Image (cartoon, rainbow, N blue to C red; front, side, top):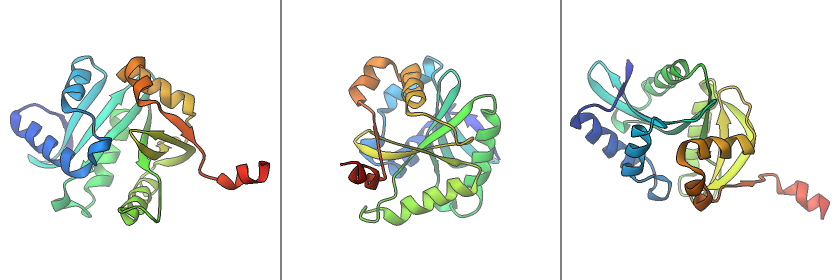
Length: 189
């Protein structure tokens, strides 16, 4: 198994198809923006291949000391066969000189995809990724931030976004830290 830069039109079609299928529209960046970030050296768009068979995708934002695993998905036809864990290992090895972080939708029993959110977090926890205790609202969605080493501050997260997408775009996205344990605030007030 290997990671490969999107090269030919077949790779690009496979990437786009899975990207649009796996991520809600409100969480997807315009593909043109992603291509521009690649041209600027601020993003890598990778396909995950088993031999020559497309099995998944990864889009990674490249900040100075941090990389954000912005999008990661395995093709539904090959899920539950170990591809996700092996692909994540390849990504961790590829970016071992930087801190790898990622966003996942917060667990919410009322969400349409509640079980999917739980499974996604379980997957990452079983594959060397750790909780940071940091939560953010961005892209009109509440996310939990995870990291390979478990270390991250909200400030570092925003700085990594600014390093890759620019302060102007990040200001429009208006990321804000959210607190999951509301009981703390209830005790204070």
